[in-house]
Length: 240
Image 1: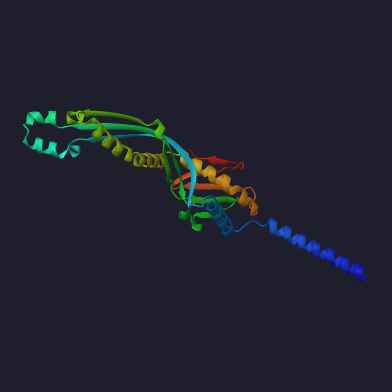
Image 2 (image 1 turned 45 degrees about the vertical axis):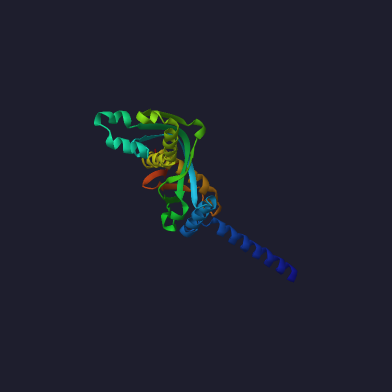
């Protein structure tokens, strides 16, 4: 009887443990767990504190005009004594146009994502309010760079020095031009926000399911743009 009693108690304890484990797994995660999972997952994907969510292929054009500020000292002295009618012949100008394609990566600063920007609503809808997108890196394709220069006046006499100086200054503005044009595109276009929402949905779905959140859906804001909303058929609707 003692052996049967012990066996029965063992089976009962085992059933209680199994029921407890099953109950624990069946419980939906709290909002705090969801917040912690979202932030931890994003931070693991972005060890450099910036999560890249897409790229842009763009082409920029930089124009640099130079005139008297490139005039040699001796020419400045001559110009001070020249007759007005002779100034157009003595003064020089150079214009250099540089056009170069390249690729820009964009995303958002992970450090700007805080727990208060994450919530869970009825129907397992995870709401994430992401920071605004910004440019991460710029990669001009210098192998496809095109340069066109025009010179007038004394610059025709000294083409090599002037050309190299103007070209160097123009190239120095390429990086800035890429960032400016890309940031303008991020602020006006919807596709980068949609790409970011897609990337985040794919990234967060597996770990949220692992916490016990069944069939998670998302409502994702990117800056002030609503880019992803849940649908009644358990799908996701990206806002374009």
